Length: 128
Image 1 (cartoon, rainbow, N blue to C red):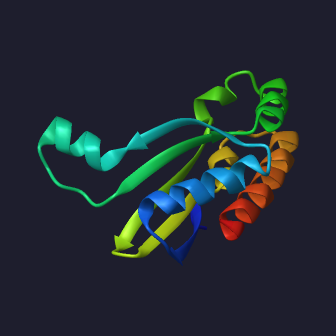
Image 2 (cartoon, helix red, strand yellow; image 1 turned 90 degrees about the vertical axis):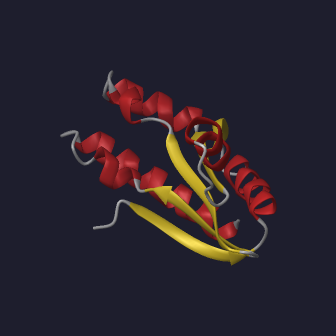
C-alpha cells in the first residue's frame, strides 16, 4: 500500500501551487504552512534542488473531529501535499494518504474519518 497518491499535470510549479491551494480551499482546507524545499536546501546546505514545495493543509472540521477521537493525533497533522517540478512544464502533485498515516492508531472511528479525508484530498488533487 502506498503512503501517498499523486497526479502529474502540465503546468509551471508556481501555477500548480495556486491550483492546488484553490482546489484545497474549495474543499474546506487551508494551507497553514508552505515550505520551499529548494530554497531551504540552497540556504542551509548550499545545494541545488528542483522546485519542490510542501504545503501543510488542514481542514478544521476534520481536524476537530480527529482531535475529539485522539488527543495526540496532532502529531500526525496537518495533511502534507507536495508540488514538485519533474521536468520543465511538468509538475507532480502528491498528498499523504491519511488512511495509511492513521493506520497505526487503533481507533475505528478515526479510520472512518481518515477515509473521508482521503476521498476529499483525492478529489482536490484530481481537480487541481
